[in-house]
Structures are given as structure tokens and as C-alpha cells.
Length: 442
Image 1 (cartoon, rainbow, N blue to C red):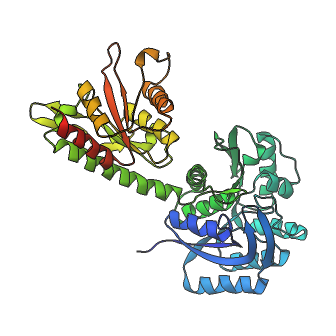
Image 2 (cartoon, one colour; image 1 turned 90 degrees about the vertical axis):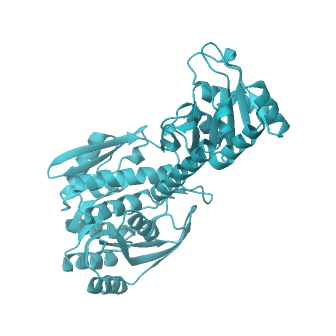
Image 3 (cartoon, one colour; image 1 turned 90 degrees about the horizontal axis):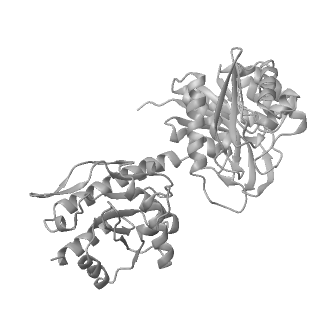
């Protein structure tokens, strides 16, 4: 299996959130092989950088030379280049090997620690003449352009001025403007492209810039155009921010593996829901618990916040003269009502990932009590206008019980069937609970 190789020329982050550690994780997640030439070793954590040890420029050059002797490399990215001598030797190797390079002009870390010597900025400007793309944030763009940036118009003026230093394209990241909508400006071939999205968090994150520039280099190595590479990289970083890691006591690191983790968890949930649904329809006794509207069974992905992160059946398990019949397949967003129930329960107790509905009867309710299950309820008559029933009802039942119960029921309302919902950690556990009840129902 042949995959593209991408070289990162950057510093090492001992906290693992940024630097070459973030670069290699990003490249691996996007399906390219990451190579590295280390420019500096830092002693840092989420609270800040305590010390920096620069590599001798000749050793940085040697790392690049050795890699280029063996690997086929067309694309590279640069990160922390702390001295003018290191920048110059990196520039010489980029020219020597005709590398197409994405330059992330790191001047200050996310925690506020300086990562470039004052005298190195002029050398950095020279490096830009070799760049395929330069990706400064607002503060870095101010230093490179000499302009103050307070608006999108300022970003465009700065991008034009930075382009005058020689890079083929400029991407100014707008996150540091601290607006509700984050806008990045891509400037290439005399044209501007605005890339906007809603701010995901107010807290400062660590590793976003490194991950973005690495992702762009990886996408370019896979054959994407620059505009497509930037858009794909932004989508990758959005996932990394959404899946950020609650580690340390300072700046929160983003999670470059979030997309892969989501794919793994989605595959697991699809399999779990299917296995549980098959278990239910194979039981001749379960048919007695199927309500008029049918049964759905769902599983939320860990940390899920929306229906799109909940696997449910696209149809229902329905009652027929031949027993229980499965009319759909597991898919993300496959159920609305049960998805809302499990999302609400998951918010109160992260261990609760699964839910299903069964037919209400006083006998079934008594059986739940005899099995020692924790039970709570809500009253549809008290439901306010404009709310989603299962969000409101599940929350009311949880607050009444003081915890997430295993059973939540309601006695229905005008045109609404009475229902029992079973909650638990996995679809299989919830399904086995339903079958235990079904065994005793007359």
C-alpha cells in the first residue's frame, strides 16, 4: 500500500497537543505518512512553555537531507522555527528539494509563550517567498504585514500585503478576532475567499494552527486543489475542536483523532443496535410488548448532543400476525423521539447511551417494580407548549427521581399512546431487560 509522505519541520511539544506531535497525528488521521525534522525540543504542558532547546541548524538540515535521500516527498509544512539561522537552513533545503511547503509562522504559543526570537521575523519573511501557502493567525498576520487587524477588511488588506512577500497564497485565520462567527480569509491569484463558521467554543484551544496547516499539507499531497485542501482541513479541525480533550489545567488540546474515534463509535453503535433489534424480533414473547406505534431502539455516540449522533432504526419493530417484524435498518438519525430521550438522559448521566420504547400497561409497570428497576414518570397534561415531548418529559422524570432511572413512563394524552421507555448503557442490556419483562407478561 503506497501512501503520500508529508514532511513536518517543527518543534516538539512535550504535552502532545501541538508541534510535531499534532502534525503526525493529523497526517495519520488523514491517511498520509508523516515524516519529521525537529527544530526544537520544548518542556511544556497545558499551562505554558517552561524551556526551549533549539536544535543546531546543521542538525535540522541533516534530518531533512536524510529523509529526502530515502522518501519521496513533494509536500512539507513548517511550524516552530525559532531562530533566523534555523529558518535560513530550512529555506535552503526547501529550495534544494523543490518542496511545496505550507508555512505556519508560529510566533507565540496558545498559552502566550514566545516561540520565535525577535530577530527571526525578517528571516521568516524571506522564507515566505518559498511558500505554497502561509497560514498566520490575526496576531501573526499583524507582525508580518505591519498592519493592525480589527475586521475582515483589515484581514484582506493584510493578506494582500503578506502576498507581496512572495507566497503563492495566504490564509489568515480569524479566530483571534473573538467574534461569534469565525471567518478565515484565503487570498490566491488576486482573489479573496471568505470561509466562515460559528465559533465552537470561547475557551482557548491548543494545537489548532498546527493541525490546520498539517491537514492542508496532507490534503495537497493527496491531490486536492488549494481551495479544497483548505476547506477539508477546516472541517477536520472543527471535528478536532468539537472532540477536544479535557486534559491538564490550562489550555485545552484539540483531538486530532476525533474523526476516527467517531467513525469507530458509529460502527460500534450500528452493530449494537442491529444485534439488539435482531434479539428482540427473534423472541416470540416480545411481540406482547410492542406498542401501536412500534418499537425503536437507539444508541447515542459518547458525548452526543444531537440526533445526528444517535443510531436508531430507520423504521420500527412492528407487531404482525406472524410476530415481531423489523421494518428498517440502523442509521444515524434513525429515530427522533427515542433519540431525544437518550440524549437527555445522557446529558444527566454519560453512562446512559441506549433507550427503547415498549407498550404501557399496569401489569408491565408492576413487573418493572417487582424486578427492582428504578422507575419515574412524567405527565403529558403538564407539558408546556412548544417543547419537544421526549426532551421535556425525560428531564422531568429524571429530576423527579433525582437520577436517571431505568424506566420512564407516561400514561398518554389526547391522541398520544401511553408508553414505557427503558434506559441503559447499551442496546443489548436494554433489549435483555425488555425480554426479561416479556417473559413474565401474561
